[in-house]
Amino acid sequence: MKTLLAFLLTLLLLGCAPAEQPRLPALGRAEISGARLWQRISAEADFEHWAFWPGHEELQPGQSPHGQFHEVYINYLLEEALPAAGRRAPNGSLIVKENFDADRRPTNLTVMAKVEGYDPANGDWFWAAYDPQGKVQAEGRLQSCIDCHEGMKDNDYIIIRRLDLSLPEQ
Image (cartoon, rainbow, N blue to C red; front, side, top):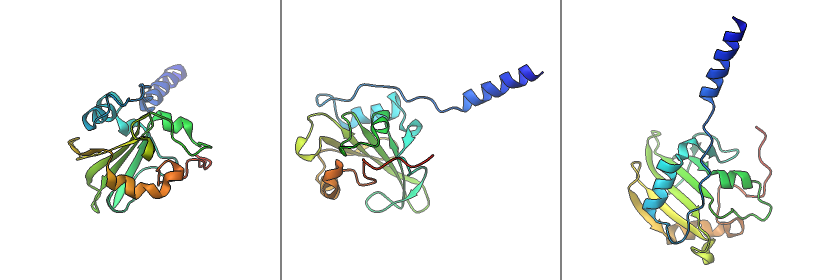
């Protein structure tokens, strides 16, 4: 009986464990587009199974233009690089911000994709915005995104948290 209970408990725990994120190669300059990036974050490696930005788990208060609330997910490349002593995200890093209104309904997604050689003058970031169903609203070298994030150029255009800070205790 104890063996059966231990076995069932093990199955239960394994069934509840989060799936490991697929280790896909970084998207390159020749293939990056809003449609291709959506395919990566939704079909190939569902961002909702990624890690939250460390110390920023679950729904958090947000601000314009990202909405009243947001959740911020990062892919395995960025997660494994943190803390980054040089305050640079590795090529292939993906940051997905799911944005919500005051009633906590999804309004859109905004994505930063680090693509080697894509836009060296602006940190090689490809920017994209999608409606909740994945329709591309904007993509590419988005000046509005660059202008807002430029103040954090020394942190690889990432506003949410300095990349070189120690990770919060779990």
